[in-house]
Length: 404
Image: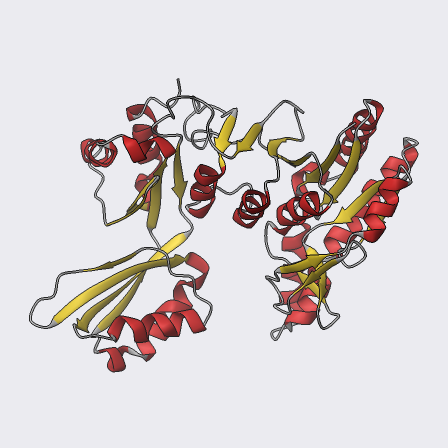
């Protein structure tokens, strides 16, 4: 008998038919002897619809009330799944995040889990019932409902799997696993049977949408066995492992595109100590996450600084930088939303020279100009024009023979 935590995303429970499919899958898992704990996301696009409704009625949208509203979607979905299980003769109990024992900090909209005391979940398991937990939510140390942010149901599932000492955590979504690149761009993209935690963390950090990066971090930190798979085909997906078992690691595992960033360029910045510190402290205090940073060589005592931020933070970043322009000696600030980041990820590049050269040569052959570059031991990222993203991905996927 295995204890498995199974998380189902929004598309997996988008309507009544899908909910019944999930319930039937759980019944079959129990029939083969497994114990199952479910974590359920809101149905379909319900979170977006609730946010839209909030915007229609309020301009202030207090964080406490917004979290109360958004988390209602997960509670609704887990109750419906529980009802479908009962119809199949499977005893089940639904739990909100607080009932499941998730205690978080007080940061509304993107709360962090502090501890889990899953007494009621464990009691349901001991009674041979299926606990159905509402994802992406908890209760703060001030006893308010909190939302863990987008993708928070993945983190809920992984954290619960660790706390319950589950044999595995399965993240069910609308894709069959982790691919060498976006199959919509490259039809010959290949599903990976396994991938290392380090590689998947890099992929999620540079644009791979699933699973949520926080969930991968938690799984790696606590040794949770992670399986990413489809709720539509039920086929085996991608297992995330500590490290590759093969003697020779593949040089490159994926080409990951990301069109969700914007580039801020600050021109005419005085080249003196402390200038960058002033600017980036302002951004950090405003909660703007800065990614890539490039500073040009100084000429006549001035320089230009470019950096990337999430597209939704571009206006905030540009406005803040303009406000401190005089203080940092800047003459201009521009925001460019027509950029994309294309990244190569692979643990094997640590021991194989020439990866960067091949990447740059491939982009040059496609007449794609590189605007910014950043690297880590197992990743190389280039900022290019957004309308050249698909061409870059296809060319790099072919250059590194990832379809084989």
